[in-house]
Image 1: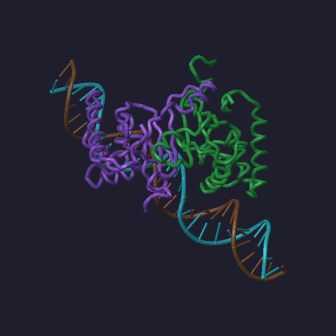
Image 2: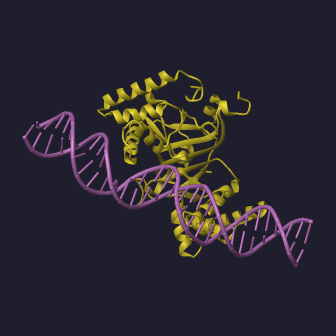
Image 3: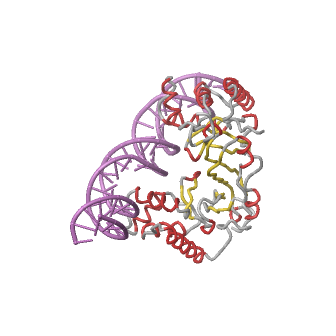
Length: 161
Length: 161
DNA sequence: GTGAGGCCGTTATGTTATAACGCATTGCTA
DNA sequence: TAGCAATGCGTTATAACATAACGGCCTCAC
């Protein structure tokens, strides 16, 4: 995979609908309930490749009459995160839809965050980063995140205005 | 380096004083001012290998009459972070003293966070993680963080009680 | 001695996140 | 079918993390 999905132009409608379908399938299989609220929250996050704050999400949900108190947003985000449909971007205190739902729960994720346009691309971590150092220290890694800030292709100096 | 400093037993007094000395030297060289407040804040962070929240730090500073309003703590932390003496642990919203001040500003850092005892070890990132994926996507990484949660050697099942 | 800049005290507020309680629905199961 | 457990969501309140903005003081260069 040479495109950590998110920056390159792509068929975004297909991108959204296939992710939604994958989420529905996964829920059906696991007996998890993708309620209208949760489904819509995921859909909102899928609508861009940017990370959304919990309160931004809440605002959009509220605009549709789907709940307007913080716990509503946080509960939906917790569910989606547990199911692996959404990732939290620690550096932004924000949440982004998973670009690789097919990779399964808890796949090693690495994020490329453009500081200019705000888009976030997700690369499947090619190898557990740190693995060597961690083993050297006798540390048992359960879960690692990698987050890089920088400039995406479109936002770099040499790019079209 | 096989010990990402922090977990293995070590001479902690020396660890603290050498880090303080390194900070003083670096400030002298750069013309930065390690004021008593900033120095004490760094010292407090150095006293354990745990990450401290800004308000925890503030509480300790306040106990010594060194300021009791949030901006006091945040300003000290910003200074120490800019100088590379302290790192922010995004997953914890907390701050930890740099274990490798000699590595210079902005060195690639990777953190091993024990979810049981709370200690944080810092490994020098052996290689820019993500570099390959990022290049593949044409993304220019400026700054990356790696944070792993898990169990340190002392907190693993097979370890002494 | 005066002006510029850095540091800190302070007030106020903004942003992110969770605890805890209660009601409604679903789906058992006795 | 009555009762019960589990789950999802509405709601209130509050906790935890972070910053904007103003003013005073000190130091240093000129």
